[in-house]
Image (cartoon, rainbow, N blue to C red):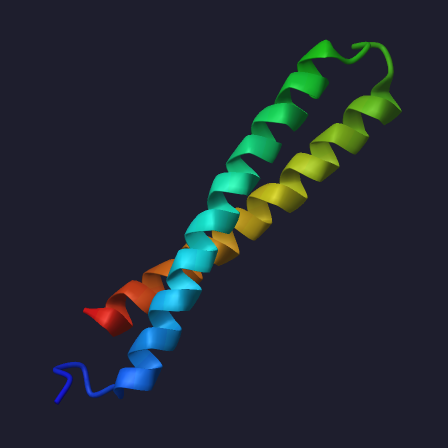
Length: 79
């Protein structure tokens, strides 16, 4: 019997979700790096363009935060 009180199927599903989150976090990291580079390369007097890049970064970072929270929940569940 599982020490955390979850079934084998629940454990496999959690492990699968954990791997999917890790892959998504890797992709988000690459995307954030690219947006930061576009921001650095952008015309610094184009405030609307700069704001669009900053808004995109904020959205990406919020997604990272949500995924990291879920990753921690799953890690705790799996022990």
